Image 1 (tube, rainbow, N blue to C red):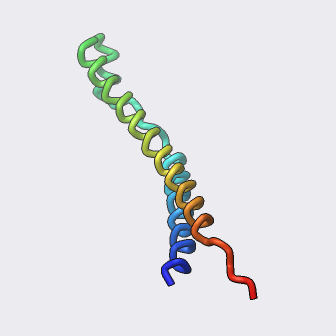
Image 2: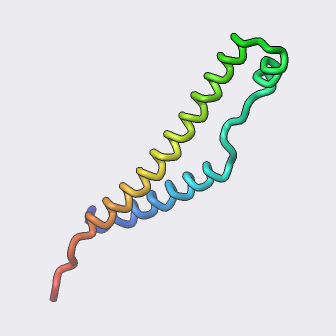
Length: 90
C-alpha cells in the first residue's frame, strides 16, 4: 500500500519544489538599500562596508536556498522513480 503512495507524492513534491525554485528566480536578487546608497554618496566607509557585507550575505543565502530547492526537486524525482520498482508480470 505504502509503495503505491510514495511515487506520486514524491513527484508532486518535486513539481512543487521546481515551481518554487523558478518563482524565486523570477524575482530579482536583493538590491542595495537606500542607507547603503546614502553611505556610498557620503563616503562613509565603515557603514558602506557593513551594509555591503549584509547585502553580500543576503545574496549568498538566496543562491544557496535556490540551489537547495532544485537539488531537493531532483532528489524527490529520483526517489519517486527509484521507489516505483517493477510491476509484477502476469
